[in-house]
Length: 439
Image (cartoon, rainbow, N blue to C red; front, side, top):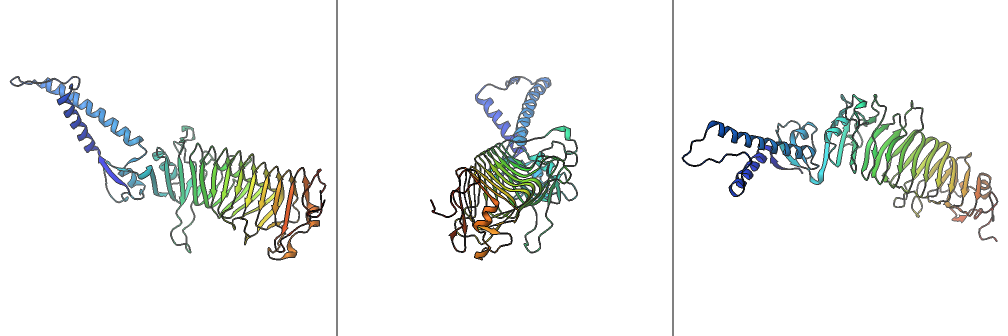
């Protein structure tokens, strides 16, 4: 709930009281002429005193307005009314110059309507960008390049706040059986870009929106220690941009949460996680990419340990999974009731990999294991997780698998709980043994 604190007239009254009180016990304002009993006050002298007080009052007014315009906790209610500030006054009320304090400095703008004005999100952000915790609840198609200082002038520059948390939620109504049309975040046509970046210790939170990528490398990015979440979101890379595209990237110590029903399509690389970043998976993630579906590298991780039915389904024209010097654990140790569907090649290099959900492998995909420890339950394409005969045999795996270096490959038939024949490997493509426990 928002708490009114003080109005501008009240602040000015306090300021004048302070001036009067101080004048009684300390030096007067410079330029004030002191009158004495019995001596007439000339009009010019009184006017000069009034000018000194007026100048001081205007100085105090400017300082108060500066506090109002730059504080991360104060907002004028008429500004809030224009955007239907959650917990504040409604847009139908008429309020002038009343200040409210935001609890925790969190500003929620719950009616950013882009239906007739796609610049509305951009305008709302620029007007309120001083706040460190911003939530926008949007309707319609909003230009996602909300950093622009002037949405109609791409040369005017951008504003990117350090350590800021931005939360963009689609207004899909309250009836799950009859949701409202999903809002979209689309590129500004003048710049062709988006501003969907959590960085510099801040956060980016996206919920119930469809995202159309622009003419840029990333569609959404988490970087430099940022956190955030993505839930009930579709990400489609640009169909017109001729450069390299990534649907979602986490880099340089970022820790985003993907909380389910996330679909990434039309990108060269679906998701790229690298340089000591960690993606926590709390629901299904579906990726359809042209080159690499999921790429995890440089000491990073992706896991869904707490939610055993959270899986990644990947379709790629080339490589579905590429894990390099990293850790990946999908589904908990308890048996998953879902399968993972993977189309494309799989590469594990210098990594720890544990895929506890049965892994359906397409018939043409290869598997490379290089200096890695790998556990998985390999199913044939279209196989049933509860049918013993649908799990791949040693011959099936040997025909498609290259095992190199000091690796341990632990494929298991989950129905029979038995080790599939191939196990530790050595010397490029040779198998150290064909049977578990053999010398």
